[in-house]
Image 1 (tube, rainbow, N blue to C red):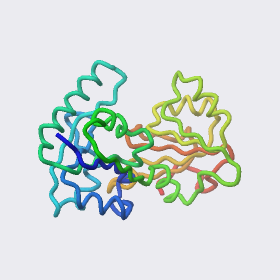
Image 2 (cartoon, rainbow, N blue to C red; image 1 turned 90 degrees about the vertical axis):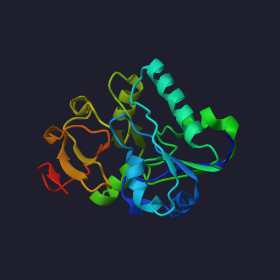
Image 3 (cartoon, rainbow, N blue to C red; image 1 turned 90 degrees about the horizontal axis):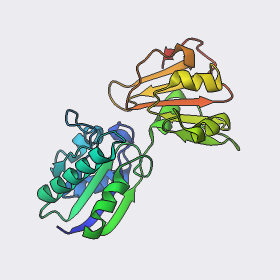
Image 4 (cartoon, one colour; image 1 turned 120 degrees about the vertical axis):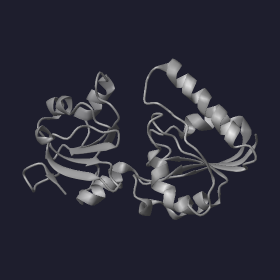
Length: 241
């Protein structure tokens, strides 16, 4: 199998209207779309975002499983399985798009995918996308950073000494998939925060308030934004926007 052109496309946080025009055009033209999902039981969030866009062009679609695990043996098994699935279903396809929520260069599996198929690809184009924290700050109408403020993105603070140092020495903090809000509160105090869950999807939730008031369960598509200088002044209680 030879791929003439492979696109890595960021489809944004979930709202199809936040697709860039460049992403929209590429999705309309490709022969095949690879849309990763986190488990066998779930659909691809990225695919849900673009279903309306590709409805008429009807490219071939593959949804390989890339599990959220640190078990290297399990990862190797699923990556090999994904490779075989793409090769089998992509026979005859010259152009392919690997779609990912947010941006392909930020905690995405695109570059791992590219490494596996690099020898079979003639040309690569990466199309950036809107991040979840950009969408959250826009809805909340609160800047992530101004002037010389330092912004840090933290995927997981638990047991990570580097993350602890970063958290204590940044002006603005973005936590992706936060699992340890109590631990964050212990490090920062009971700061005011913005929590976005499934931002961009129809059932999105946007909440503001103090860390101690967060009662929502954590979610794979959750984003928490905190600034050292309290960013939320009203309302006082943790409230849906």
